[in-house]
Each structure stands twice: as C-alpha cells, then as structure tokens.
Length: 367
Image 1 (cartoon, rainbow, N blue to C red):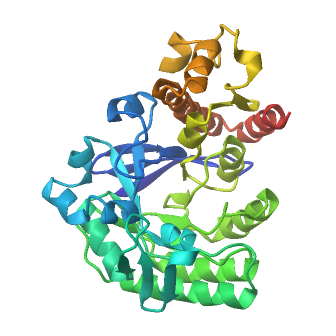
Image 2: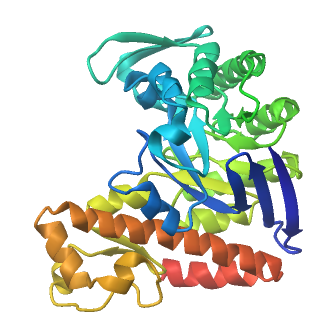
C-alpha cells in the first residue's frame, strides 16, 4: 500500500491524493460507505459500486460475533465472502466496545464484553483484534483503541490515551497478511494538549495512514474543528488522514479544509431507511406530507439511479407503506450524494479554489 499526494490547495491545505491498495486505487478525499455486517444495508455490491464508492468499511466486532472470522477466512476472506472487489477497511471493534458501556469492562489487558446477540462473554485484546482483522483480510486494519465520551475529566482522558498507545504498540507487533496495512488512531478526547501528545507519540507507528478517533461522539462541531486544527500540522503529509465516523456534508467539507482525506459513517443509509434524503440544502424528509404529490426527482441535478427513475411522491409512498424499496432508493441517492460531493471537492482542490467552494457550499447548506 502506498499514498501519492497529487495536489495541495494553496489557501487551506486541503489535499487530493491516491491511495494504492491490492484491491484498487482510492481517490482522496473519499467517503467510505459502511457495510457493518459485510453488506451495505439493503444494497448489493454492484449498486454500491455504481455510486462511485471505491472502498467500504466493515465491522470487526459484528463479524467476529456472527458469522465468525474463521468462517470468513475459510470462505476466502471478506472480499470474496461479500463479493466486493474494491478495497475494504475494517474497524478494530474499539468503538463498539465503547458504545456497550453497560456490557463491558476495560483494563490494560483489553476489553471484556457481553455479546449483544446472546449475552455470552468475550474478550478483545489488541492481539485478538489483529487476529480477527487478519482473518477477515481487509486492506486497512485499524488499531485497537479506547474511545471516550466528551464529558470526562482530563485525567480520565489521559488514562484512555495512554492505554490506547500501549495497545497500539502491541498491535504493531502482530504480523498481518502481506496486503494489509495498520492505521494507528490518535485519541485525546477534547483536550488540545492530549491531542498533540497523542499525535506525536502515534505518528511513529504510521506507515501508510493515520486515523483520528473519538470525535463526532457528542461534542459540538466547533470543538471537533478545534481538535482538527490542533492536529493538522502534526500529521504526516505523505500519508492519508482518516477522520472516523463522520458523514454529514458540512463535516466533510470542513474536515477536508483541515487536511482530512478519508471519512465514513452509517448516517446516509440510516436516515434513508427513515425517509430522509441528503441534498445541498441539508436534509429533505421525503416522508413528509408536502411531497405526496411532488412528481420531481429527489434532486434534479443528481445522476443516481433513484433520481433518474423515480419521483419524490413515489419514494414517499414506499416509505409510508414500509416497503423496503423506499429505503433502498434513498440509500442509493444518499451514498451517491456524498460520492459526488467528494468528486466536486477533489476538482475544487485541483483548481486551487477550495476556499471559495467551501464558503459557497456551506452558505447553501446552512441556509
């Protein structure tokens, strides 16, 4: 795996690059749709590919519990198992352990947790997370980390940061498959001094990519942007920077302006199943009554399958009738919206007009 920096915007530091993997080249900045359980919910791999997505994210925790990483390895690895020939990133399971606060216990050795499926007890150490991800065969393997909520003390945030760094060192000692690359994760909560220290101590472990974790978990947008501003000059310029768990258009546009190259989030498909579409003005709640007799596409400028073939009125009917097709069409549109946004961002950076693009986009989006 290698990263090629193509161009950097003169005003903002926004970047265009290419990440080369054994399963294809990824143009950055990019958005990664989330296929938690080896599928982007409701969509086939072919439909996801048609949105322009070049890389997917899958979930180590969920695949470990069901169907099991050993089974997936016997099937030929995650790419073959789910019939996706593009690149795949697997998270470490750390965020899922974080979200199961009532079902887990964290020590320096790792995290003990109860399965959300049947309540059975399991233990994830850094080595176990690497073992599972190695078996899955993803292209990008995430280090096992401890994510923390934004309302903890500086002392507790430091303890979690230190534990994440110890776990990172243990992760780095586990041999992966030849095509796999480990991305370490910068933590430090919402404390600038901890973010700086975490970055400085994490960078030596970064070989071809580094991630920023523990943001977009309840803190304000302004706080998140402040943390990204702190980190931007400290991250290696010759590697991609991945902001974990971020997928709204405004966060992506502002994140790119702060040197971020990769984003992921379940939001586009989750809100689609609830009847909402992503548009340049923000969010359109298609399930609402005003669209009952609206025979226009979701977005007349969008080239996705849903917008080329169906109306707001029809999609609203599907959503109100609890028909699966409604969520599928909105999922296709929402992912395509973010893939088009990423392409527009790349073009603006290449033309050294990203600052203007950002201001124009945010004015329309906020308005």
